[in-house]
Structures are given as structure tokens and as C-alpha cells.
Length: 338
Image (cartoon, rainbow, N blue to C red):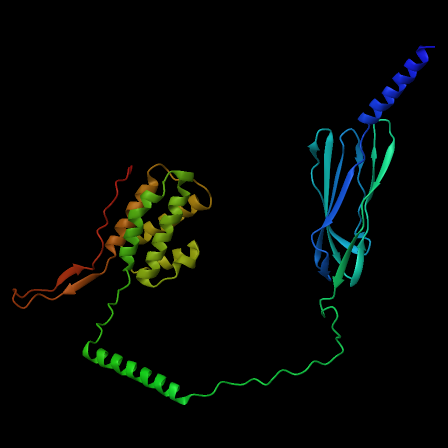
């Protein structure tokens, strides 16, 4: 007979223990960032659930609308633990209302499922918002004609102030004119343009420090060297070779105003440059430096010569030939093979 009370006590104890460890219902919280909005204004709706970590949460499916509100964006944040044995689920909906008046944000429904497969439904609260029109303020009759504003009163015209300002301007202009008469400004110094031969020699001087003649078989080297020579032709002789093809340039070189073998040498140079640049035919070792040296000598040999008459106190004689002013070439050290 004593076993019966003991069994009942054990059963009650198990029931108490089971009820103490049974999953608690989820804590549901909903909130919005503003309760009164205008038509089309976004509303941030936040759903927060704290539930037992042993349960599986079934979240609601939200479509394009939530009641009479449109869902602009649906974002679910990563779940995290909110305490011992508790998880936190958070979902944010960006809503917009396009009807005026008082509207209800519908509740969201879901369920939790325990390890035995038993389902427990849950439901959030509904929220009330007020939507106002963007065309008129609430409580104002838009059919009523409002009174006209008072006419604009222009300030009184004070002619004596304008007369004083005009006299001040005339006095300042007179002072400026007198100072200019007493101390005329020196004429601005006119900087003459750089002669074409000087510009070409400067480019040639900096070229070995900027480009390695052995890179890519000399393609970059010949691209730069051809451009320097073509620009010198254009600036020195008035050509337009920078925009011409090699064939057109070859025809122009046949009647070029320079000789001494430079015509034939220039044609040979441009043929080799095209093979290296476009056919990717690598130049022989040392040939890029040799062509650089020829271009430098060609530019120096075509610098115009100025005839200068002898001074009056000197012995009469023929005019002297003086080369035009040019920057010293400062030829860089190159490893040139014959």
C-alpha cells in the first residue's frame, strides 16, 4: 500500500520537472518608427521574437502587401542568443501607405515546433497609424478661398544714396587713372615659343631615362623616337606628318629640304620602326641606340644658321654664320654597338 503514494509522488515530481523545463512561449514585440505619416512616406516596422532555443521557429511569409500597406523592403537579421536557452529573431519591414486616414498594420502569424513535433501558434499585435494627404493639411477645407496677401511695399527710393555711391566710384576711377599716368606699367614680357630643334633635343635627352630600349623588342622606344622625329618635321618644316601614314611620309621625304644622306636614312628609319612597332619584329641589339644617335645628329645638323654682320670697329669681312640658340644636348651615355 505504501508503493501507491510513492508512485503518485514520483509522478507529480516528474510533471513538475517537465513543466519547469518545458519550453516557454515566445515573447513578441512589434514597433514602428512613426505613427503619423504622409502618403508615400516609408514606415519602419520591426518584429522581435524571443523564444526557446530548443524550438524550431516557423516565420510568417510576407508578400508585397501587409493589409493596406505596401511592403517596400523585407529584411531579416541574423538570429542570435538573447540569454540562457533563448534565441532572438528580428525582422524589419519598410512599409508605405497610399491611402489617407487611419489604417491598421496587420498582425503577423507563425508557430513554434518542439522536438516531439507539436506546434504552438503565435500572433503579433496589430498597429494603428494615421496617414495624412500631402496636398492639404488635416482639418483644412481645401474648397475655401483664402484671403489675398497684403500688397508688397517697396522701400522708399533714396536718390541721395545713389548719388554718393556714384561720386565714390568716379573718384576711385580718377585716382586710378592719375596713378596709371604717373607710373605706367612696364609692358609684359613676351615669352617666345620654344624652337622646334630645342624641344626635340630636350625630348631626346630625357628619353633614355624614361624608356628602356630593350623592353618588348624596342617597341616603346621606336614609338617615342618616331613621334619626336615626326613632330620635329611638322614644327621645323610645316608638315603634318604626325597624322600621316608611313607611305605618305615616304613620298614627302623624296622632296624634303634636306639631303646629305638624311632622306634615305629617314626612309630606312621609318621602315624599321614600322616593323618593330606593328609587326613586332624585335630590333637587333644596339640598333635602337644607333637610331637615337642619328636622330640627334639630324636635328643638330638642321638647326638654322643666322648671318651676323661684323661689328663697326672690327676689320671688315664677310658676315659670320652663327647657329641659332639651342640648349646643349648633354648627350647621355649609351651603350652603342656598331
